[in-house]
Image (cartoon, rainbow, N blue to C red; front, side):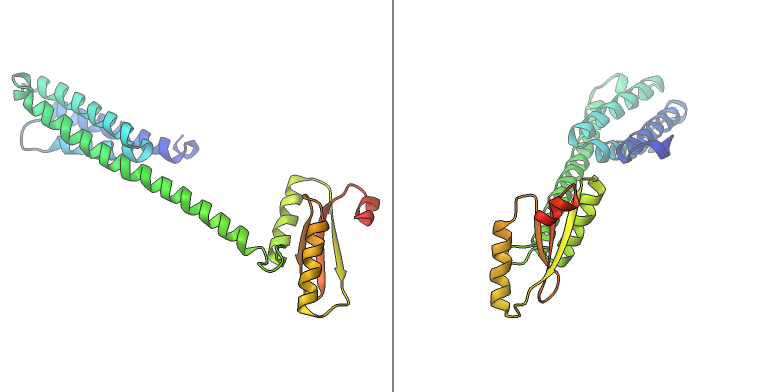
Length: 207
């Protein structure tokens, strides 16, 4: 069952088990000085990691409720005063909110980093001078189109020009003339590859 669960669901399931174990121990053996109630912090942290600050606060409230039930059963002072209950509520909720906030912020930073990495890879696969994609970029586009099962053609040609300036002009001209669904790449000093959508050989030849 755990193997089929997502990461957050596993954390929440583990937290439920911790809640149950700590509550049972408190209910049966709870008395001042044993520190059994500290085990609730583990459950709170697990829930906060899975859901964020709001879930962490909710986990703290649940832990406080369970602690109050167990304390009342064992005849603790919580039955005569609400101060211990308020202290537990504040500490549990604060721990859950803090852990949940930093976990949520960490996930946001990871998502932002992945987005920046994707943009950097996209830029790295294009030649600055011509705006066309590199040989690595054309390979990635071919693989993507093959996975999408959309018909396309790969055209490869060699120019007679050897001047770098002329080649760059030619690449810019090809990129401007190609359609929005076509990709132009320089795969050698004088060799050019073009990926174009085409369903037949005649369409590829016309392109």
